[in-house]
Amino acid sequence: MIVGKVTKEQLLTVYKTKNICLEGNILKLIDPEDDVEFAEYLKACSERDKENRRKRLEITKRIQTQNTELTSAQEQNEKLMQELQASLDEMEVSKAQIECQNKELLEWKEENEKMDEELREALRVAENAKIAAESDLDLMQKRTQFELINNIVKVALYIILGVGAVTTGMFIFAMAIGYDTTIISSAWSNMFGILLTNSFSIVGTIMGVKYASEKGNS
Amino acid sequence: MIESILLVDDEDLFHLVFEDACSLLDITLSLEAINSADEAEKRFKKWFETGDIADKPKCVFVDLNIIGSSFDGIELIRRINFMYGNHVVIGIISSSNEAEEQAKAVQAGAQFWIIKSDDIEPRLEEFRKDYSAYESRTASFKVYK
Image (cartoon, rainbow over all chains, first blue to last red; front, side, top):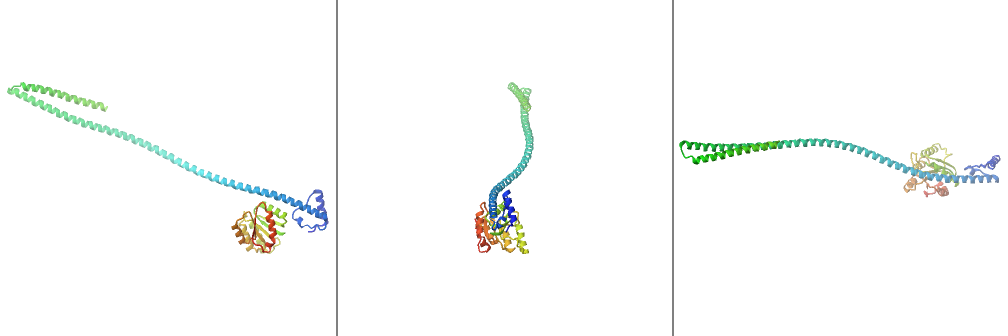
């Protein structure tokens, strides 16, 4: 590529007065021909361009390295964020599960309390039933005892009355026909005394048993 | 010097690095960088269909994973080679060094694989030396580590 004389002069003037150079690959295409000054100018421009490119290359490489590191750090951050998010999600799920379990436990507790109350009520009813049964049993036992005592007392009274009647009859019969009543009278009086004593003893026993039973019931 | 280069890479910062490295190493005078495999395919399709290849690059560097594109770099190379007529020196420029991917790239017609790193200039320098062999299709697939 050939540059005209006027252009060459203009380029050289700009370089000398304002220190502005041509740059880029265009420098590699320009032929300075035999113009030594312009050749020097192109050489200077080329060196400056190379220097600038070298600097830019170094800076770009540094930025590229930093960029790679930043990208890597960002990827790690994103990974961490994803892990955190996953943990958070798991926590949310666990929280929901715990809340659900808590609710179930509360319901279970309420049911237990209800059952406990029912059990207590049942226990109370059972206790009452037991007391009632024991009372009934006691009553039945006493009733049986009273019947037994009643029978014994009746039999005893019949025997006493029977013996008394027989002895009295024999004593009256002996007096009526004129037999000696010495022995039988003493026997009758003794017998009658014994019978009376036993009768009072039996009545006293009955009264005692009755009193003791009434006291036990109260 | 390579007449013209097309870089297909989603990383804009690497565009600057590649451009400055190519300029400092005098690899090319004309470099264009785009960040989409779809856009690259569109251009190759147009060059293939219209026959107007004035602005068609002589060499194409393709990133392996081009974020935001419908397909990856290997698929782009396969399409350029088998659907749009080839006629360019084409290969992968990637930070990956997986043999499996490299084998796929070879099958797709890639001629080289440059490992992308901070110190890319020595690899580009080496590539420049091998470029004429790639252009004449006499060089075998090479990985620049």
